[in-house]
Amino acid sequence: MTEPAAPEPDDKDWTWTLRRPCPDCGFDAGASPPAAVPRIVDDVLLRFAARLADPDATTRPAPQVWSTTEYACHLRDVCEVFDGRLRAMLSESDPLFDNWDQDATALQRRYWQERPVPVAAELDAAAARIQETITGISDEQWPRSGRRSNGSVFTVRTLIQYFAHDLVHHAHDVTAAPSRPAAAPPPG
Image 1 (tube, rainbow, N blue to C red):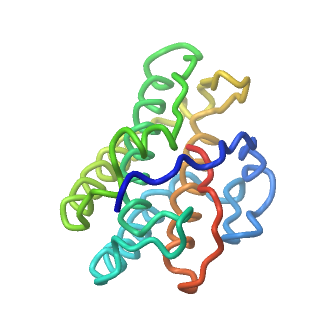
Image 2 (tube, helix red, strand yellow):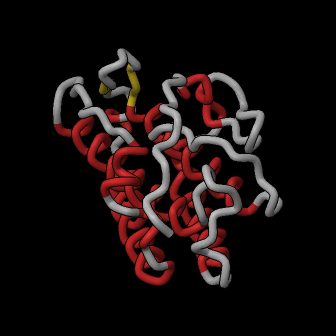
């Protein structure tokens, strides 16, 4: 595949997923206990491993919809970005997160040229790192805060819940019917 066209910027504030269930994937991030997130990560990894083994794992279902491999690249990077944000929250006072443009990252890292087997291994490693960070959180660290440049404020708890939605949403994207709708992925 040649370089895909840049998608329309997704400037929606997806933090609403912390207040109500997502109508697309059904996940209720705000009701999800953070202690359950490592198990959620394991479930998402299993779902992606199965899809990455499919012969069509690098095929886009529509020109503006990522392939399973591209979604896996995105989740690998989501794990890395959220782990960095989480570690900053645990070690700094109210850190301001660097902006992360997921679409620019997809183009820069050339997701469409990635191969499923190495991406699966990289996703597993990135997921293991954030799972380790999450399981190491102490009771007094849950209310610690961090901010995105758009003003969204997270606690350790809500950042982990928001992260869980991102994973579950994309697992839904790749396991939904093959004619899944052409929708931009939610921002990390």
